[in-house]
Structures are given as structure tokens and as C-alpha cells.
Length: 494
Image (cartoon, rainbow, N blue to C red):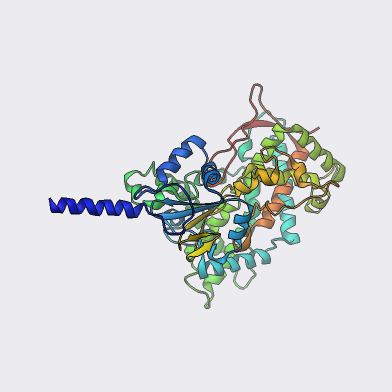
């Protein structure tokens, strides 16, 4: 009897202790023992359908800094212009989560540049920026490459236009967008009809749909993958990454075998292989697994967000034909119909650029950015954020802030133009992030968005089939939001 009472007492103490919040932790919902806030979050996700709306729900109750516990991990969601700017300016929030979900994509280790921090990340970031610069990022060579890729895209779509054959418009820009990054990474381009590449791109999209940015239940209880491999998301996570891993391994081997000694590198892969062979290279950073992790980072990040943004952009043009008409009028006046737009035209096409900005704001392709981690226990506003707390930034809260944008749920490009029609830049509009963790491929992405969007709308009409409804503005949930699939016929613009 005494033993039973002792066990019950211990159990009660455990439950009480396990639901107790750290002193000074941000406000938020109550925690359950062991699982924390997971059941409530899942329940709300069934209602809202999108995780960023779940976090927005809590923000409306608790304010711009909300605290949770997800399994054993503490998690803080930061919303609103001031709180997000403060977070991005603080060194102690530059870490990345280190749980199971964030390691499984890179062979069970913390490797690459997206989900790492510390010395190795600093080294790999410096390498990546240096290699990209040497290979022409932001220079005339890379600009010419993107312009050529846009021209190739136009020619490809011309071959599909006026044939009555349906085109998958949800992913129509996948290959040209990836080719821009692939030229840097591997030194060559893919053919638009490459069946294997189309399969790999499909896997990339799937990998962003498997789980949310918090890592979900799989991140908290990795053992669950042995019991529920399907429901936990583990099986799909591996199945989507396996063909990508294999493809990248084959690519690295092929490039390594064709390298010419003592010649400048023609790609990031070649530059990294040279570092691996260097006697002075740090083996914990410059090794084959790190190279594959970097390739995976570039391969995924280099295609997903830009391609999805363009996909949403075409959907919005179908919903707002008057805006499409104004874009075309501006392009026809500045560029004419005799050539496709080039990057030098961008300063003279402010309305087109404003439309692209509004597409980025309205689409919210990365509504929660990439998760951060507190590198040490620190004060944030009036709260105490414990070391290793996962921190999620709600960029959705910025893009849909009524107090800032007034009518955020209206698609209105004019908000990015002043009274004289010049482009306006807002400090709350940060589609590529801020601080040390700002997107390294920002220049490539901005240039690609402008050239692919302007070239496409200049040349083509998207014709829906008879009786087909307008494609849904609401996207698919995941780490990133993507357009729902739809098919249409292309017509060469008269």
C-alpha cells in the first residue's frame, strides 16, 4: 500500500512538474504532460488547414510572442513587425533546430548551410558566398544566363502553345527556375522535357509537404517512425529524399571524374571538390557528406519558393485580368513586342515590379520562414527564452498585418508605388529575411522572378478549358505553400 501511494505521489509530482512553465516564459496555451501543446495544435490545424493560421490564432490571443511546448521542445512563435525585426537583429537567435526531423534529410547529421549553425555553418556560408561570387552571381555573366534561360522558357512554351495540349501550370516554371541555380551548382542546364528531372522536382515539392516547420511529432518522438512509419511522415520523408540523394551522388561523381586539374572551378561542386582535396581543408567541414548536404540545400531552396511564387503569380493574373492588362501595357511600351525583357529593363517597369512584390506578399510562399534556435538563454522583450528553444518567425503576420497594409487581403500592387508611380520599399516587406540568416540566393531569386514573370505574361495567354473554374487562390499547406495543381492551354499572345 505504501509503495502504491509512493508511485502515485511520484506520478502526480511528475505531471505537476511537467506542465509547469519556466519562469518568465512567454504566454501561451497550457501544456499537457509529455506531449505539451501537440494535441491542441493538431486540433486547430484540422480546423484552419494551415499551420501558419494556427500560429496566427494564438497570436490573436496572446500577443506577438507566444510560448509553447512541442513534446520535449520549447517553441516560441514571433509575429509582427517590431518583434520580428528585433529577433533578426539578435545574434543569440541565429541558431537552427537540431532535432531528428532537421537531421534526417542530411544523413542523420547536422550538415549543409540551411539547418546548421556555429563554426561549420560560418565556414560553409563563406565558401558558398565566395563561390557564387566567383561564378558570376550578381554579375553580367549570371544575368546573361538568367536572360537566356528566360528566352529558352519562352521558346519551350511556344512549342506547347496553340496545340490544345494541356500544360501543368502549377509547376510550369520548375525547370527554368532550377536551371538558374543548377548552372551555379553543377555548371550545366537541364532540358525542359527531362523526365527524370521532372520526377525529381516532384519529389522536391513532396518533401516540402511532408511536415510543418516545427518538425511535428516525428521530431519529438523519433521512435514513433518504427511504430507508425506512414502516419508519422517518416516513410514519405525518406521516400521523397532517396531519389534526390541518389541523383546528387551521381552528379558529384560525374563532375569529379570530368574535372581538369589546375583549372578554375566551373561550378560550386567543382569548387568544393577542390577544397576537399586541399591539404589545408578542415575535414569536418570539407567532406563528401557536407558537399551532398550543400547540393541538397541548393537543389531544394533554389527551386521551391521561386517556382511556387511564379505559379501563384499566374493564378492571380487569371483572377485579376485588369492588373494583367496594365502589366502588359507597361511592358509593351517600354520593351515593345520585338524582344523579351532583360534585367536592364527592370528600373523602367515599376508597375510590373510592384505586381511581383504584391505576388510575394499575397502568396506567403514561406509563411513561417525557416525555424531558428536560441543559442543561449536570453531576454526577449519582457520574457526569458531558454537555450535551445525553437523560434518560428511568422512572416505571414507581416504580410497580412491590417494595421500596416490597411487592406492586406486585397491584391493591390499599387500599394508598392508612390503618387508618381515610383517603386516603394517597406521595412515590413522582407520575403528574403533579414540579418545573418538572410537568403544567400536573393539576387538570383529577384532576377529570376522578374525575368520569368515579365517574359511569360508578355508572350502568352493562359486559357482554361470550357467549364473549368478559376484555379484556387488558396494553396497547399507545408513548409512552403504551393499552388494547387491545374492544367490549362497556352496561346501565343496576339
